Image 1 (cartoon, rainbow, N blue to C red):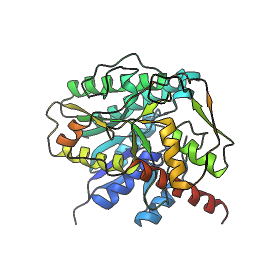
Image 2 (cartoon, rainbow, N blue to C red):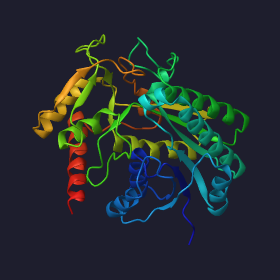
Image 3 (cartoon, one colour):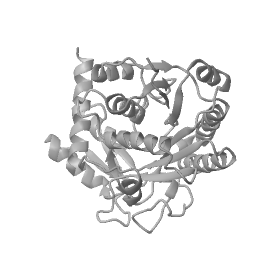
Image 4 (tube, rainbow, N blue to C red):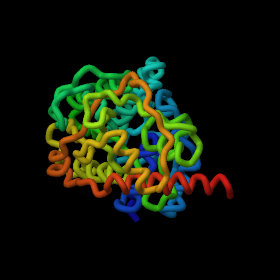
Length: 347
C-alpha cells in the first residue's frame, strides 16, 4: 500500500494550527506531522483533535530555533510534500514590550524551517502571515498589491521581514514553491465546541478576552480607545472564522501542488472583506449570549492600527475560497468553546 504524503505543520497545538490539522484530516488524504514545543499551547490540544477526528497526531516537541533538532525530524520523516509554518510569537503588545524575543524567535525559526525545506528537497511551503504587514493605511480595503506602511509593532515587522526572506529564498531556489497567507483577525472555534483558542499566556486578542470576561476569568474588558477616526471611535478589524482560515490552507496547498503558483511566491489575503468595530463585536457577543459584558474604554494601545479590512477577490478567484461563517456564528462558536472549557475544569 502506498504511503500517504505528509504535511509538516509547525505550531500544530496552536489555535490556527490545530483547526487546520482537523480540516486536513477530514477533507484531504494527507498525513499530518506536527512540530510544537508548547511555548503558548497545551499538549491537551492533541487529545481534543483525537476526540473530534479519531486520529492521534504525531508531534515533535522541538524549538524551531534549534536547527540540529529540527533536522533530525526531517531526517526521520519521509514522504513530506509540504510545510505549513504557523509557529511564531504573535502578541502585538508583548512584541512592543519585548522586541528582541520576537525578532529572535520569529525570524530564526523561519530561516531554519526554510533551510530544512531546501536541504531535504521539500517543494511546497506555506507561511502564516498577517494583515499587520500593511501597517496604518488610509486606503481601504487592502489588496495584496497594497504597499506596506511602517510596521506598527515588532510582531508586524517580523511578518514583513518574513515575507521578504521567503520571496528571496524562492528566487534563489526555484524548486521551492512558496505562498504567504495574510490573515486578518481569526476568531471563533470548531463547530463542535470541543477545540478553540486556549492560550497559556493572558490573551490579548479581542474575542478570547470577551469570552473570558463573560465567563468570569477576567474581571473586565478594556476597549483600547474610542477616539479613532472610525464610525464609532473604536478600532475596526476584519474578523474571520478560524475554520474558514483552516480550509484556505488546504486550498493553498493544492494550489502549490497542482503547479498553479507560477510566480514562485504568491500572496493571498484571508478575510471576509467586512470591517467590524470593537464595539460592534462586543454587541454581537452580547446578542448571541444574552450576557451584558463588563467593559470600559481605556486609552489607545501601542501597536494598534485604526482600521483594516481586506479585499478578497484574489483568494476567491485563484484559490476558489470563500468564507462561510457570519460574525454571530464566530461569537457563538467561541462562546460554546469557552463554556466547554469551564465544564472540563469541573469534571
